[in-house]
Length: 88
Image 1: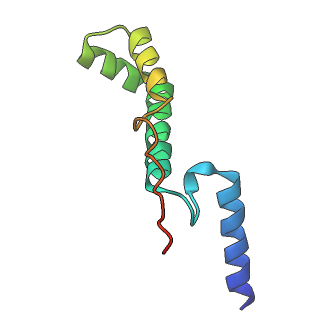
Image 2: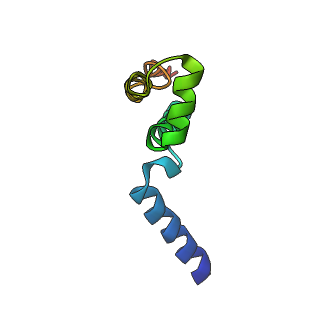
């Protein structure tokens, strides 16, 4: 029983420390946004990937980096409208 509590508390600590790990209330949009931002940040941070994208898009590395950084703002588009729950 003690192991279960210990694992649960470790998971809660991990989820509070790192946003990308998610939690029970994470929406699909939030999870996808985190995944896309992680990917874009990785592309920006790895020089070889940035060079590859620049060659493929026939753009300068600075322009590709700028475009990727702009995508970080809303990588999955604007957030969805909240659903209204009808009470009966």
